[in-house]
Length: 110
Length: 395
Image 1 (cartoon, each protein chain N blue to C red):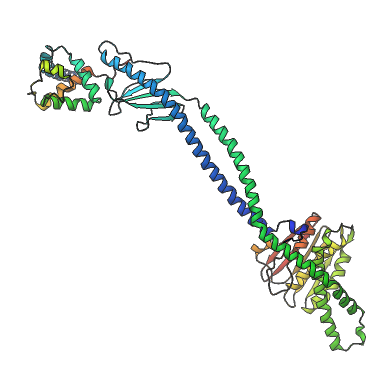
Image 2: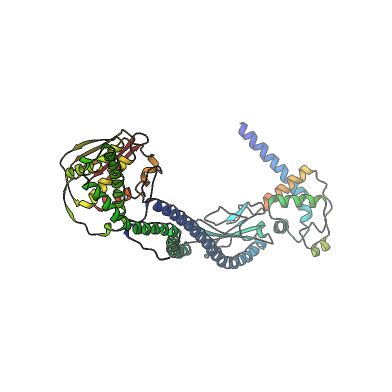
């Protein structure tokens, strides 16, 4: 019984967390020609490790500028730079964690 | 300067041998260490050269693999198969050195080295400028069969053996130079002795013959004592003279071996030395069985004379000299000053004298040793300071 409750709690929290990413990231990016995965790969190619990528994403989402963006100038000139995020630090970290887990290269190569 | 040499001076003294051995061990050790260092330096240079060749090849492979990673990076949503190549194995690591994917057999990576040999593999670590798939490091691995290493060590061994032989020859030359001053001094001393002994023969023979012919019955006691002293002095000089002539002239002569009755000879020599023994109030204790040996009489007498003469010379006043003979065994024991244990190995060296108070050249025991060795006999020395010395001859 206890095991079932624990699983339920974890599942619910994950679902809730996923909502943070889906609610706050996907709607805006859906309108852009470059997918979130392509952007992920662009950040990965520029910053390599998990810690680096997450740090730069967190900073960029809070203080977005052209110099921090992994996207080209042509892209930002066409679609502009996003507004700074209004999410709390905790929610932002959760959203970035979900983003990393969703597109990470680790364990996916054959 | 031209100096005469004889067989005796051509053989090495024990002290010379010890110096020579110490020098040679030091020289060989130094040469070996030098050769090992050179071999190590040569090996490291060759290894670097080998790795330089491998680096060129692996850089080419790394370039090809980077291109493949680039393609995979851009089409990652559609393709997930890591690019493989039969010529090498590879792996990619992120900036935190966390493994992204690896096909390597040996995954112990030294990220701070660009190329190195690990067991049977050569690893080439390439740092990427653009982190395709998040890879900061790309590691390429090829098999190392070690054939190059065997080849290098073989050539090192050949060169080392050749160099060692050259060093050895040079060492022998150095040793000769090292010993030359010592050898020259010995040869000079030999020459001096040879020249002077020759001049001693006639007067000494005349003195001894005249002493024997003198009628002591008609002499007053005072003159008898004086004559006895002359006799002792003449016999001492005679023993020394015989040793020196043996060393410089007689030892080269062919042996005249015969069956010797040792008991008779010992009794004869004891009688000869009796007057010398009495001058120090020494008493002979003899225990003589019948014993024979096949030997040159002249040489046995030299051995015996030297042992008895030493037993008298280094004895204390009023002491004793024991002589025991049985088949294959003879000893001469004195109750004298003895000799320190650490000096025993050197007492047979030529010109070696441990007691400067007594006369002599220090040649007696070197003659004994030479004769003993010539007849394949054995000599053992037991000595204790202030107790005495026992010289044992076995055959």
